Image 1 (cartoon, rainbow, N blue to C red):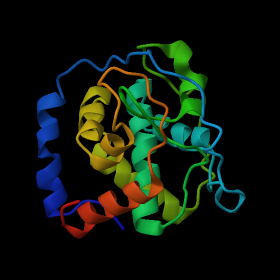
Image 2 (cartoon, rainbow, N blue to C red; image 1 turned 60 degrees about the vertical axis):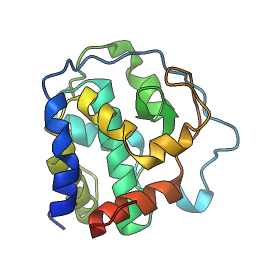
Image 3 (cartoon, rainbow, N blue to C red; image 1 turned 90 degrees about the vertical axis):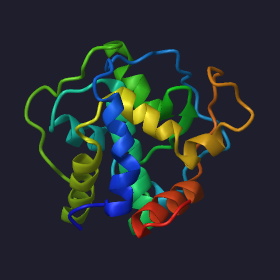
Image 4 (spheres, rainbow, N blue to C red; image 1 turned 90 degrees about the horizontal axis):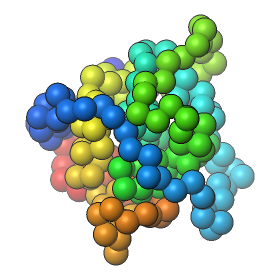
Length: 194
């Protein structure tokens, strides 16, 4: 799999270009708790820690936490859609600024609006098939800003559905549904509408 996109997804994502020149600053009015009811099934813990996948993306370039969060989210979502398994050992919640892993937020919140830079050399310990997926996510989303990826995630059903009943700027810790991710991103891959 070289790309997770097809012509219909390329048309769908073309609206991102209008966001490319926006500031890449993040906001940090995020909550940090994980709902008790969202424990991860012991049989499906995720193949990798969220930090391992974050380090893989950070080995590509330094970036803001907002962009890093969205790239990790898209890796998780596309893995569910295309491979039907949990790539990362985290739950993404529908926060004000898009999908967020509370564990990843906690780790990097001290960076604020600044870019996160990977110190030293990152040694990859990820299966080749999963690297192929990560490369596809990077190829599809990597050249966009955190703000552009936030805007994209705000237009997609998985985040929208998780935030039903919440005001636009209201704190929300509702997990984004795995089933919603699978259904929506698979429909994009197959060229249909969600």
